[in-house]
Length: 282
Image 1 (spheres, rainbow, N blue to C red):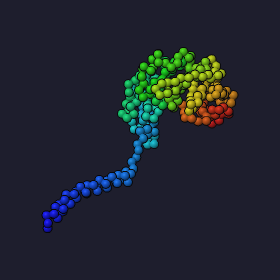
Image 2 (cartoon, one colour; image 1 turned 135 degrees about the vertical axis):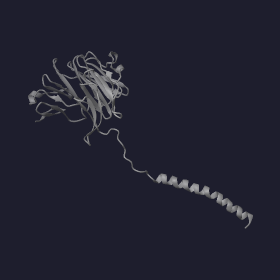
Image 3 (spheres, rainbow, N blue to C red; image 1 turned 90 degrees about the vertical axis):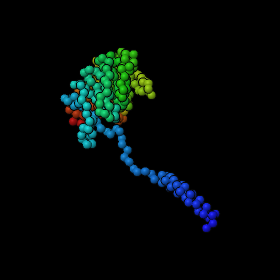
Image 4 (cartoon, rainbow, N blue to C red; image 1 turned 60 degrees about the vertical axis):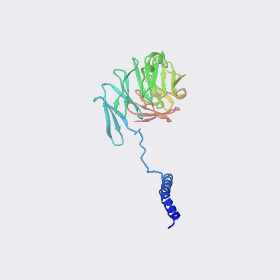
């Protein structure tokens, strides 16, 4: 065998590993393009669970509704409290000490409480807390994720001196207040800024005992004193005149719908938002 032939064979052997490496890289790249990957289950952090209260045990728990079990709970120091929830944003309000605290849903623990203004009530909608002093109509809003006392100062009030008022916080975090004077204040968050506008609801008596709800973005109010329902576009219904007894309670804030629900001591009443004859279900 000539020296030249031996040299060619040695060169070929030296090039062989590099050639195999190139083939391997090409094969892996091709496989990566063709193979779509193994299918995996996407976990939704908002599992649809409901946060419930047991006031006799001073506990707040997470109910796995499908499994019908409590899979987490925390104990509060309060004896009179309530819970607000929008997905994984949860708050606990101490109605005795007038404080509100966020819940860490991952650790099932209660965050630091924030003091509410004296004489006020709080209501969560989305990731917003509406706070109202019902006697003088002073209104504030703050984050439900991280309530801030700075947002609840006298200087931070969105409206004040409106007189006796009712309020509701919608599912989208919009806050509505209605004074006995008929002034309806609507507060919607635009980015990081609250935008407030006012309108007038006609025909509210001076001695009205008001409660409110919102269906989508349609505000409905009830005067428990005169048993009158105030609907959008300044429509109103004398409920007693159409056979609806007194003592009714409006539904909680809900999604967009064509009607509003009213629970009386003996029936469930469905009232079209455009007005008309209510449906009374005993």
